[in-house]
Length: 127
Image (cartoon, rainbow, N blue to C red):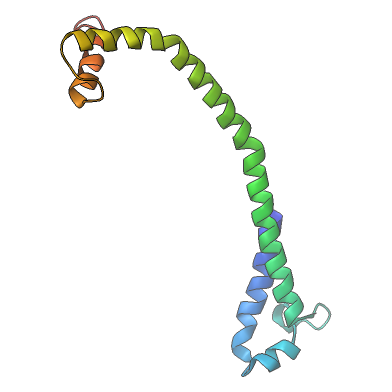
């Protein structure tokens, strides 16, 4: 994607730096652009705009595909690891919730959550 963005930058810079020299869009449309008015490497101005847009969007697609290729498996494996840990700790969590129920706290309230958190934390001096 870096190459595609570099190509987009070259053609975008060529177009952006040339536009001020033309009075109308028609003049710009008919012009041939090149670095420092190079005669051998001149390209039609509309071709430059098309190449810039195509390279930019190709870079975006490549970047999104690359991120998806790398990140989706990582996120999925982390999600699976998290759910398996939650499944193994949930019986202990349920016991703590039941204890807080016995103390008279209503489930779903912040007081009940605080009770579970306090019971789950290690005693002072042993943590």
